Image 1 (tube, rainbow, N blue to C red):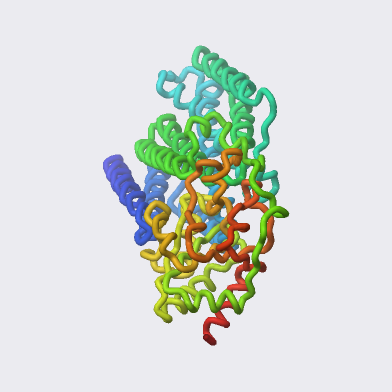
Image 2: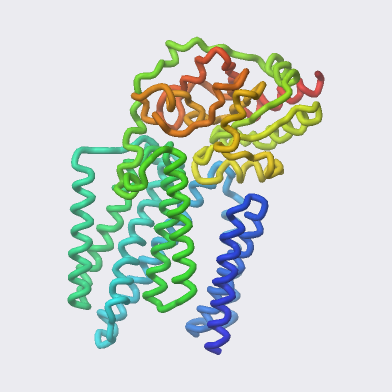
Length: 464
């Protein structure tokens, strides 16, 4: 039986690697997700059979119950709530690691104090508690920011880094006490509480506009917590899969940081995005000359264009306008217009948010072009349609040194011949700053709900 279990673990590990590899390509991402899910199913079932804690009937019952809960929850979650759901999932992984580590330590310290504990095991327990606690409370804080239950602005105060350092030092001292004297339940509890507080303090100074980086970082933390828990349980597949998730999360975090011209060190220290709430010294809405365009005029502009680039943002997700955007793309292509989508790495509230939305509306994958590959094409484009994006198209990132997004790589939409921005109002984006683009002479504002206004414009295009 043990050989069968180990072979199953090996198969699951291979499938995890294949699944994660496929997630790197948009065309194969859904298949990769299914392969990884099946690998997890194999690993969980093999572990339960190996432990002998529950019978096959109980295993099946738990699978059906958990699957039903997941199915109902997933079907109820709107696409706009996907970042919050991902944050919660990261939190679940963290708290599971914390509970498993604490349970194992309780067994060794209270129920079976004579059990021998080597250095690797005790260090793994301590890391599981620390990383798991930070991941759980940090993910809940990120969820609060994403859902609007907590201010999306950066929350900073004097001595914040010093407090973080002090709490980390307390956690280290508690860890040393636990390692020296197995049975230090109080020290372990204090360490767990400190890790939960640290998770909150590390995330609150991060502005809402920087949430994609936080989500990928917390995803990495959850993987590392799972990896250390694998050492606690002496479970090889948990070690490997946790390491895979942790490493891929760190790589994705680095990509996100590069896309926003941020430092990974500042993210790890919890100071990331601390300036997000400041507005800089750019022009205010009252200083800008805003030119508004109606649905009929906008339709005529698109009808006369030969090339169009659509820039999606979080506002498109909120309005659930991805389907009408796809319909508009089909209509324009039927008129011989070249239509593409420009995807900024941090558009939305989590990595790949816009790709998921557009894939849901069956936009061909080859139409989704990354920022680095399309930025030089804006100057040769007739019309750019910005749907709900804000900070990622703000020229202040290039022109205003006082702006908190200065030197952040953006989409060069302002270089196009005509820019039409679909937006509800002149409200600032998640970074809390005015968008200089709105006052540019080649920019036209199409005010109103994106789904409603674009639906009307599609109707006008059909009649032209």
